[in-house]
View 1 (cartoon, rainbow, N blue to C red):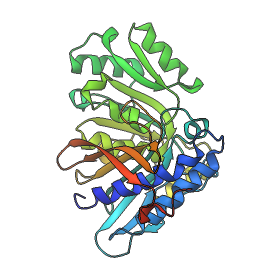
View 2: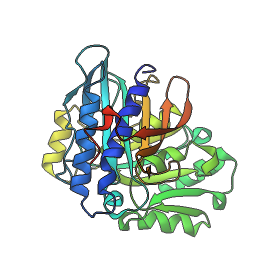
View 3: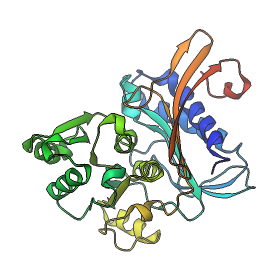
View 4: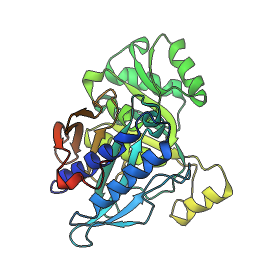
Length: 321
């Protein structure tokens, strides 16, 4: 994966740039389509035998890199790919914060292969790794993280998406005198933020897309944190799809090792609009500036990179409108 991480960087940079004309237009479908087409084009230039094992789009009937799609040149290493061309399509369409282009990869057979559906997720940083339990109550997890981090429970900060479905968790955090960090859209970066000490985030909890869950899990595992999840199928069709992919007990909590079964994994994200870790794309005359993070599971390092792209660079002719 060390050899592929910079290829993945070019993929997310290209997808982010492709979405730029659609920021603030109110058209999230076309934004997603532009980013998806660009991501697919760039993935197919990489020397690898890749398969999208978890993709995005079916929930909203949006354009997608679909589950089972083969990407790459077809030669080289066999790679599982998890993608979200835009994590935060609504934010992109509204010109708001928290939108990224993101990809993760690992050797074949090591990423969870699951349908695009909702997933309950909980994540924490290295200090509390091994202490969280998705089958325990939320209050028990708060106490476990507080004990592991050497904090009083009122000193915790929990990052939660500002949604009605999360209101009970938000109220519980505040009832203990602890703090909530609420965000609007895109839960990959918030989950990973628990592993970055400077953010002072102790715990992430939420219900969101399964693709974003696997993507976040790669970042969390690569930084030594912990994450657990549970698929939340809402219909018999979704339950049957889980079983067809080998997930027979859909109610069972998934440990981090079941989400990502290797340390040889890579995570890359590029900011479309700004969030707690990334700056959004900036345009200055004939140049774009992108800000990205790269996380390599082998060395557990997070690298930040800022890249200046010239508009007439041939690599971006297909993605710049």
